Amino acid sequence: MTSFGRLELKKDHTLSKGTSNFGISERMRALLCLLGQSVVYEEGCELLEEMLGIEISAPQIQRVCTHYGNAIDPLVRANCESVIPRLEAVKDQDKVYVMVDGSMIYTRDDQWRELKLGRLFCQSQVVNIQTKRREIMDSVYVSHLGSVEEFFPKFERHLTGYKNKVIIGDGAKWIWNWAEDNYPGALQILDFYHAKEKLVLFARHQYPQEDTRLKWIKEQSDKLLDNGLEDVLSCLRSCRPANDEAKMAKQKAIDYYVEHDDRMQYKTYREQGLMIGSGPIEAAHRSVIQQRLKLSGQRWSISGVQAVANLRCYKHSGAWNIVKKIIAAAA
Image (tube, rainbow, N blue to C red; front, side, top):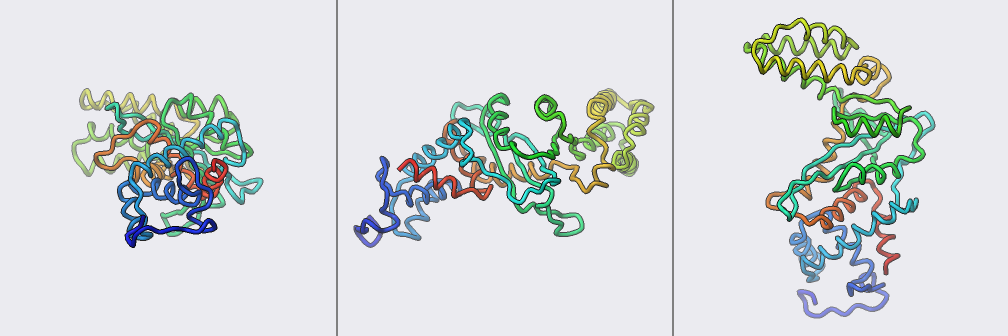
C-alpha cells in the first residue's frame, strides 16, 4: 500500500524479488537494514513513505535489522572468510594499526554495558590533509557488546594475515594483556594524550598558578615527546607534593609511566612516521557507535544493539555488499 493507493509490482521488479519469511523482497530487506543502521526506526518509516510511498512500521524495520545484524556473528565465529571485511592495498611492509576501546550503552535492564569497538587501518591509507590533520581513507571495524573473552576471538578473525601490526591504546590492562599474550611481536604504543593527562592531573593539584602550571606541563610533555621519560620520572620523584591530592596524582603518574615505559618511545615512533595517539578509535566510537546507538532516551535490548552495531561496522568498513549477500543467502 502506498500514498497513491495499492501498488502491485510485477514479479521481476527489484522490490518484489525473493520474498522471505518476512514477506519482504530481498532488495527491500537490504534497504530496511541500510535505513535501520543509519537512522532511528521511526525516521526510517518516514523516509520510506516520503521517498517511495511505501508504508512499513518501525517494529518491522527493527525486526529485519535485528535478524540480519545478528546473522553476521555466527558466520564470523565459523571463520567464514567471505563475510570478514579485509583491508585493501596492504603492502608487504605496510604497518597495520590496531586500536580497541569501549563505549557505554544503556540497555533495557537499566544497566550501562560496554560495547567494545576495534578498528584496523594501514599506514598507506593515512593521508595528510593539513599540517596537523590526517584522514584515514579505509578502515575495518568490529564491535561486540560483552566481555573481553567474547570480543577478542571475534576481533582476531579480522587480524589474520597482517604482518606488521602497531597496537595503540590507553592504559587499560585488558588491551595490553591481550596484545602481549597474542601478538608479542607487534609494536605497542601508549596513547600520548593519555600519558600527558597524568602530568595534567598532577599539575592541577600541585601548581595553583595557571602560568606556572601550563609551563610545567609543556616542559614535561616536550620531554616525553623527546624520549625523555627518565627525566620526567626524575622530575616527578623530586617534586614535594603540595597536598594529598597532588601526592596521589604524583604516585599514579609514576606507576603509570614505569608500567608503560617501553611503549613511550615517542620520538622514535614519530621519526618512523607512526601515529602516537588513539584519536582514530575515539573518533570511530562517535561516528560508528554513538551517532546511532547513544541518542537521547534510547534503551536497547542486547540483541538489538549488537545487530545494529554489526550493520554499522560493515557499512563503515565499506563492506555493505557482504550484508547484501547474507540477506540473499537467507532468502
